[in-house]
Length: 279
Image (cartoon, rainbow, N blue to C red):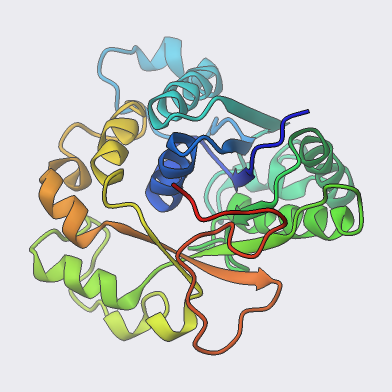
């Protein structure tokens, strides 16, 4: 029996694993913990920025290509266990693809939750992480990922070796303000952007996980997603030292058990059965 501490991170599409959780994946994998990444879809409705691929040939098999990218990105982060729930990408909100009966956003909540629950029973995570109620930014697959993960987590409660803690990813308003002060502005940032509407203030965030040693590795993992990430993507140009200094923390809000006002964790496994501080 595998008695290592176990962490499960549930995402919607390949490349999602890097931005908000790439650091913790690498951190806990390096510490010897069991780290599991689950994707709901293979990202069939994504982009095709890789100029070495012919769109006519590659687009029909984009899901296959993105799955390969995901597995390689996880390998670079030190993650050995990768699972796919087997649903099709729903596309962005409002797209015609949203209406397809086989897309993830239209899946049976019961069936999808059971698929994830089967993986939970196999890998026995103590800690589970996914998106918040809005899916981070409103993508239909992200919202469905939240719903399915929360439901599977609830069903696993009371089972032998059921998960003990559930977190939602969080964005720190203060951290983003520091990032903007360095001059690195995401392409999506508009002139009328109001930072007071971005993310959460730090006093509403539960876990502040130091990933400064792993931060540069996130660039290497993200660059593997060549279909989705252009070579000149701003994130890839951030110097390593600046990554460590200004992007060296990943943020999470604990939902189960409920977090207490002012509570601040530095280890996702803190308080779990038999858990010691991460190396």
